[in-house]
Length: 609
Image (cartoon, rainbow, N blue to C red; front, side, top):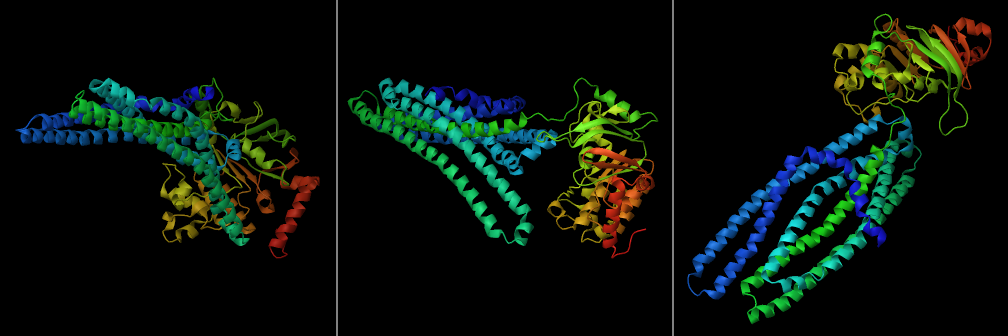
C-alpha cells in the first residue's frame, strides 16, 4: 500500500510539459469550465423542482394541474439551457484537448527532427509511429474527457452530498458508507492500470513496427515465398498485443462492476430506511424522491472517479513514453556561446564575398561508439575552392564516414574538419548544411510528385530550374513522359521508378540547390557506365568553379577529377592525378586494373578508352 499512496505524484508530474498549452488556452478553458459548472448547477435544480411537484400532489387537493404545468415548464426550460451550455463546454473543453494534441504532436515531431542519426539507428520506426499516434491520442483523452470527468465528478458529487445533507444527514451518512470501499478499490487498481497500459503501448509499438517492416519488404517476402512466415510473425505479435490488452481489460472489467455494486447497495439501504422515514413523517415524500434523485446523481461522480483514474493513468503512461523522446538530447548540436548571426555572416562573406567551398581535414581520427577499431586514422586532406576531387578505396576503407563528417551527420572532434577556414563545430548546423549538397548511397524518394521531389520544399525554385536539373540528371524526358508529367505522384519510396531513375532523381534534387559544396557518394551506381559519364559531365559543367566531391568505383568517373585521394583501411594512402597515381604503381593502380576489367566485362569485352 505504501507504493500506491505515492503513485499519484509521478502520475501527474508526467503531464508537466503540457502546462504551456493550458496557459495558452486558459480563457477557452475558463469559459468551458464555467459552462460545465452551469450545467451541473442546473442539473442540481431539477430534483428540487421534482420535490415541490411531489409535495403538491401529496398536500394539495385542488389547483394542482396549473402548478404541475408550471413545474414541468420550468424543467423544460432548464433542459434547454443544459443542452445549450453542454454544447458550449463540449466545444471548448474537447476543443482544448485537440489543441493539446496538435501542439504536442508538432513539438514531438519537431524535436525528433533535431535528433542525431544514432537515435534513429537505435529506435524502431514503428515505436515512433505508435508514440506519435496512439500515445498522443491517450494524452488527448486525458486532457479532454479526463478533465471534464474530474471537474464534473468533483463539483456534482460535492454539491449532491450537500443537498442530501440538507434533506437528512442520517440518510446521507448511510448512503456514504460505501465511499471508503470505493477509495480503497481505486488505489488498488491505479498502480496496476498504469503498468499494464504501458505494456499495452509497448506491444502496440512492436506490432506497428512489424506491420511497417512487412509492408515495406513485401517484394522480398513474395520473391522468397515467405508470406506464411511473415503472417505467423504478425499473428504472434497480434496475440501478444491482445494478451496485454486483455490483462488491462480484466482490471477495468473488475473495477467498474464493483463500484456499481457498492453504490447500488447504498441505494438499496437508503430506499429501505428512507421509506420508513417517509411513512413516519420524518421527511416528506418530496424530500424522499429528491434524495433518491441526488443519490442517482452521485452515482455518476463515483463512476467518473473510475473513468478519471483510467484516463489519467493511460495518459500518464503515454506521456511518460513521449517524455522519453522529448528529453533525449541530440548528440550533434550547435556549440554553446557562439553568436550564430555573426558566424553565419562570416561564413557567407568569406574572403572573396561568398562561401567558396574550401575543405580541410587535420589529423581526423574517428570511430563509432560501438566499435573498438578506428574507421578513420589521422587523415590530413586539403581540398581547394572550386576543385573537383574523387575519393576511392575498397569497401570499408572509410570513404562514406569521411564524407558524413563534413555536414556533421557524424560528430567529429574539434579542430579537425574545417570549411572555408572555420571549424565546422563552430558553425550553426543550419548554416553548414545549407551550403552542402549531399547525395548518399541510400536513395530516398518521397511519396509525392516528381516536381516536389526535386524542388524539395525550396520556395524560390522556378519550373525552368527544376526542368534544367532533371535534364542535367538525364531523366527529364522520362519524367515528362509519365501520365501527369512532373505532377505525377510517385509511389512510396519511389517504388514506381527503377533504381537508376531514383538515383538520377536525387541527383536532380541536389543540382537544383545552390550549394557551395556537392558530395556524390557513389550516387550513380545503379546506372550504366555511359549514362553515368554523361550525367557527371553535365553536373560538373553546371557546377564549374564550385567544389565537388565524388565517390565512385568507375574509371570514367574517377578520371574526370582534378585530384584523386586513395583510402585504404581508414588511412589516406595516396593522392594526385590519375596519371601520377598510375605511374606510382600503388593501391590506386591495383584498383584501376580491377575497374578496367570490370568495365570491360560490362562493355562486352571492349576496354574503355
